[in-house]
Length: 237
Image 1 (cartoon, rainbow, N blue to C red):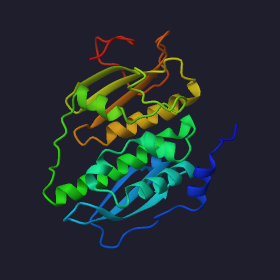
Image 2 (cartoon, rainbow, N blue to C red):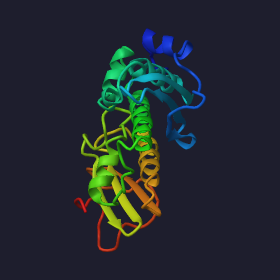
Image 3 (cartoon, rainbow, N blue to C red):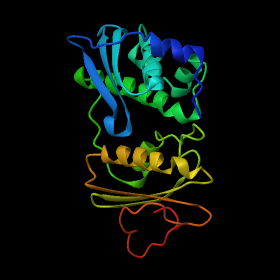
């Protein structure tokens, strides 16, 4: 079935704002990857005296929604302070576009996270923030997975209680995602998104992700054995 887009999405896709790259940018950040099909890079020019974003541009390597959300995100960010951008929520970008199909809500998350990452880089460069040393534990992994959106509902897999099990041992992480009634059509997409998020953590050397049915606990992916002594459908680590 064809995806239906709002007039606002179509406008920002066909006539995107602030496309390109700022030469001599004060900060830049890339979110996503070609592997998942969507990637966007933001560059910023920030006034250090008042922290106002004087210019922001993007380059998108993705679908219509990826381009439209990145375009709208730059429109909302230009003229705002870095603190205001840090308070942005993906839902606002989607609302300003007249809404997004659930299967494309992850694009607004990608755009907002990319902007915030660029702001963070600017703050670090100006001594306003420090590089965070990421500790690999269940809490940080669960926080990271809040950015993975169920394409069928447009909601975070964490908010939907789909993260069934997490176990971290050294540089190895094992995660189970319960579909919770989600159509199996989206299972591979969710697995890829989760894997990509986890592989971005420098403290991890091995990532194992399994998708299972909550009611049957039937394994849907062959990505390695469950930790010894654990059975499918077990509680949180």
